[in-house]
Image (cartoon, rainbow, N blue to C red; front, side, top):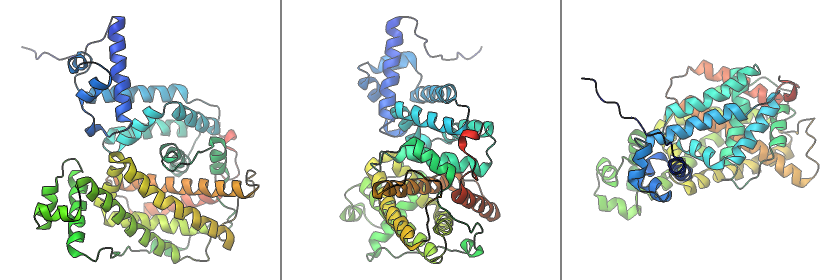
Length: 407
């Protein structure tokens, strides 16, 4: 006897179609503010002013509903993002994401939790890139800053002007003539940064890092952290109010260690062009998290768990970045691209600095996904070649070719 296959109901009546759409709109609103695990079927139904039983008339589970939302996103992107040039496609992507913020936030917040989702989004962007003949590094250089600006611009309280942003990617970030990276850039080894004077507190944070990284925030309990640390649960609560505070403090802890190592890596190249320093910083970033893979998982998961944690983490990087880039302009290690027309006064100069900061942060963020989150082992030689090619894009953009001409 054949096993009966359960199928979702396809609504025929108008009221049925309306109910299903209400559920989808409700889910989209919730998924855009919370990660997948924190949203329940009862919440989706209640937010839609429907019963839980009504949910099961149209969907077998929330996974099916979420996949339907993603499939519609991918279909829409293929349909809506059109253009005769790479410049037009970039603009259309900005426009689409601006009009569909809840959908885009729902996709981004949950990319960490679903490898298939990351792969699907990456696949569709590669379709656009292949149409215009972009290399692997060219694809990465173009799309990583755009995705970061879309996903994090609001978080950083910064309004991105798509035309200006894409033109800056087109031209490159600086008028740099030295296009060869010193081999010493790739000779950095991260060191431990002593952050805690209280050994017991440090031990609790270190074990929380290991458990959050291995099992995830949701599946780790304060009891697990206490047991791994060899202390009573009450002792953990002497230091931290709850599990989320442990996560928040852990992200701060990691951020300080990362910035300490990146600063040391960059410092070795004082006097070199700023973009050489940036590649040194990116290499240090990857080496730091390669040595602390659980730390990277904690930081990445925290972004979908608590927007306040995420904002604090990225603002703590963005503001010093802007200061450092301004200093580089003043000491001559960073110079404006020759063909950047929009920098005319102090206000537009500040805007240029913020754009460059966003682009570089976007590249760092998606390098983490590319080399760390995928779990793939990448040979160091591949990484060196990738960063060398990326350096050329940062210096020259698309080599003097206007993106309007990528047809």
